[in-house]
Image (tube, rainbow, N blue to C red):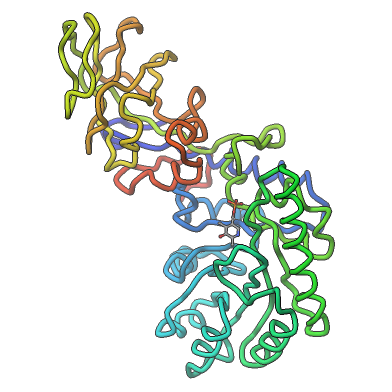
Length: 379
Ligand SMILES: *Cc1c(COP(=O)(O)O)cnc(C)c1O
């Protein structure tokens, strides 16, 4: 499956078959006309944007979302077909790339629309307006429907405007106040959409993963496109979320034991002498550290799995190495495979320990960690 000589010290295994199953299970849970816009920003949440997008393109996905124009160009150069929407800002100097690579740009404000669309040839750029319904990040302010309508009508003829979208900022919450807020966001979006109904913009969307799980019914009329990110990768929008049956993590992160040593009670482990052995212990050193994206916040609190058994992280996580307690695991030796993230301990579990979210954990796995693909079309 993998060759340790090639994969080296720390590697991620990505099961493209599971990615495909996650997509299919999600699709089955939706009405037939529902289209998935695969959110593959940040290198597909660390999973590899080209490999993930090729797999999904091959399964019929025709819409992709990325964070910036360079990510979009990477996908086009890799042969990805269909719409590619840049969700964020693109410098006006790069306007020609949008046309050259047939990329759809989000118009984040009136000022930005005016600057971008005054570039030569800009009327051929595909665009969608972001509408801000309460997150206060980007988009036209939906509190002023008339102003949104004016701006959309003014710029629609100056580009190839094909859609409007908004972003829900608390759709993963089941708290009453938050539910009311989300419903309010959808209603604000609906008012803007209705004000420009006659433009017949084909792409109207507001649902992310959590929105799709909990708010599809309040989004009638624009629930047919779901911007699906985290669920594709088999992780939860929130620790409390229950994913549909069969949706599972796509990624496993592994390393090896580089050495095992016995230490005496009273000895210290690692920088800062932050761990002191209470008695005789067996310590295994692993060649993965925070430069690989293994958070230093896991020092003296994380755990890994070796031979199916839990080994607590002892001492501080270093830049390139870390140390774990294997006193209770029989027969650990150099070269043993170690699970950092996998079936015993997932990205969501790791996130919870360090006060983060699964999204951040997988995005942070650094480029120097090799990605090994399984069950995909050969690339
Ligand atoms: C990242 C992002 C998404 C995807 O969110 P998930 O929670 O991963 O499904 C959707 N829409 C926008 C605008 C985003 O930035």
